[in-house]
Length: 103
Image 1 (spheres, one colour):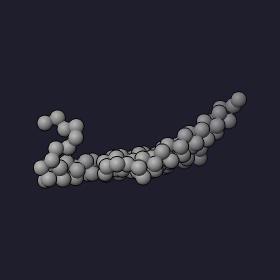
Image 2: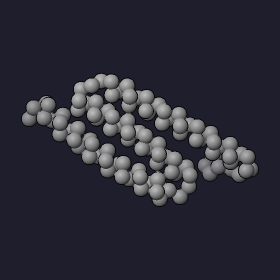
Image 3: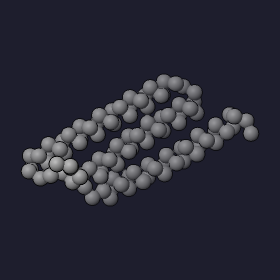
Image 4: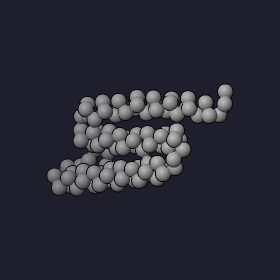
């Protein structure tokens, strides 16, 4: 088996696993009981999108896609941080403690 053929099979397997993870993330968003559960599902979708772009970069050989995947991952990370800050302030404003907080 040549290296090119192996890389083709590996990238197809990666796309299949990413698709399965995408379906599970959508299930998490739909069935999430709380708002943070749903936001984590959306963050997972963002990271899976970066993964898809990374696999496409490997399959096509166009390295610009890697930069796009990094930018998408950074945007998703910053959005998750902003949401965590929003939830923290909302909890402080309502006078309730956030579950898992150590204070």
